[in-house]
Image (tube, rainbow, N blue to C red; front, top):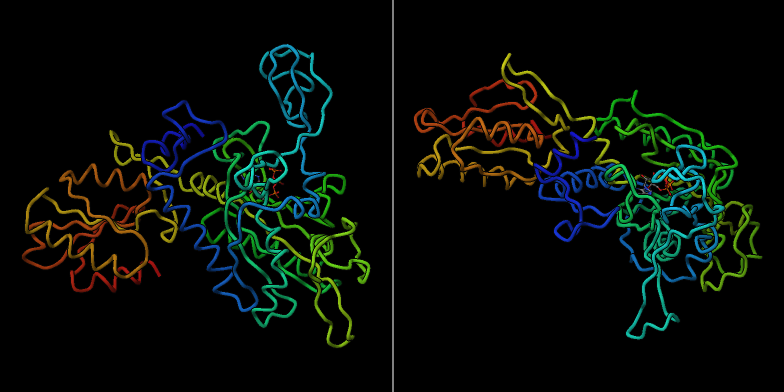
Length: 448
Ligand code: ATP
């Protein structure tokens, strides 16, 4: 973990947020390389969840959420962690995460309070008067607005069950003890799909999504043996869940949840629906919703309205970034005196797709040709391409190995004669000459 944290800072993936004022615990900023990696991961998820499917739609809803939504979702009452105070040093801890039984991890005192529920939601005032009467929550998960938009999306598309709504975006949780770098933070991003199905078909769809999601993570570059399917114990299930399977990953600090795949039944649509009593809702819903909308669909064969069940694969973007960095990180001996660090990321995730490097800094002919090559590759729209006009080829290779750039293209004096460049591969360090006129084809083939 220390090596990853150090690489992330050195090469501009992640910085402690508000760093110059001492930082705030549990908040991180994505730097120039981090933002590209994170966007590429999200884009890959969107590609597989929306573009490659014929049964899903996308959504980007507001982060600020009305308290009534989070009342009916159950979050106001149950979205809590057990909090204990150390009476000796005044520190606060999550009771279920104390390593040494009932000892304070800070001062080792055993003089702790009894655990009490601590609600993890952040509140903020809405409107110009902050008298506590008008407030909103920063959403603790992205999915509630998917449920509240269920009818809008049905009415504006021609979807019928089974179908899904996908959303990616920020979520906020006032974690008692944020820790392990970006694993447990207070502001993070989720990638969530709510897949609506007919009750009775839910178990089968649940299995489908568990396998689909493991397959997707493997396609992002995570070794299958580092992913574990964990059945959440009945007594640990969230209030809405009939069954949840966590996809755990072996993080540098230990094995923990990367994604959860839950069968949320008809709990959420049931809780938010108008005239709940008109439906046979199987889950324990929050009664008396003041919703103005019936969140149900019609069974055309049986001519009856019903509330669909929902299967939810919910993944953390930041935990995904951490897992992928961990998988890709390598240290290698180049020869007996030299070592290199490389990030062997899958090319579609690499922050920089290619670096174009003129052999001699500021040499007009070499730099102009490099600029032209860079611009042509950039126009292909497969991600960021950079020009490296610093003159030190060895240093450039080392930097690009460390940020995971799959190929470096060197423009040298021979290029002016034979109209070809040296292409160096990150993983094998093999070099080959490719004609400038064939570069676009070579590049497209490489990344597609
Ligand atoms: P945990 O048990 O680790 O607190 P959770 O079960 O509360 O996680 P979910 O509510 O299922 O998490 O959220 C779905 C996903 O969102 C998680 O699998 C995780 O990847 C991500 N996530 C949840 N909380 C955090 C957090 N504090 N920091 C970063 N990612 C998070």
